[in-house]
Image (tube, rainbow, N blue to C red; front, top):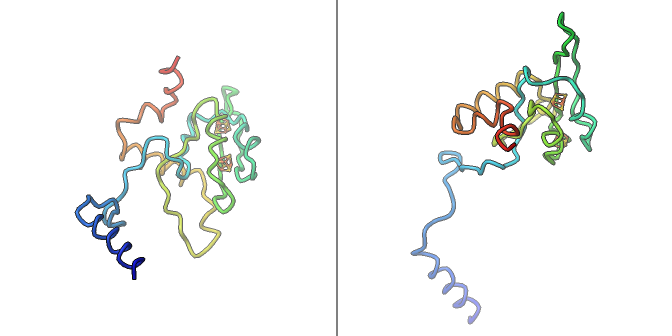
Length: 150
Ligand code: SF4
Ligand code: SF4
């Protein structure tokens, strides 16, 4: 009986307080800038150095590129298998041009694992959606963050 009253007391004390839960998905959370959701990718910034794929602890990045007429490497395919990605952020840390970045997209629930294998076009569309949601963070998406810090 004492335990019941004690629990009731805790509940009553919380009633007048401001609610901390959200009516998701109608009300969506505002994640902080350093939130580690699934990646976004900017193809024109990628120099096909392969560092992201080499550092990945789960080997879930696969990419390919070719040399163009000016002998510059251009990315052809860039895929991430989110079935095994652990969102550790190592790939974005190591990328010298900030072509691959984390986003605040986190809803990847699906009935098929095949749908978790996302290609360059999906990742680029995620970049565009991120820029629309956060226009104030756009310089961070154009490889300018490191220049700004210098
Ligand atoms: S976040 Fe980590 S596990 Fe996922 S692709 Fe990047 S390096 Fe690999
Ligand atoms: S995304 Fe970055 S680290 Fe990966 S291949 Fe392109 S430039 Fe290199």
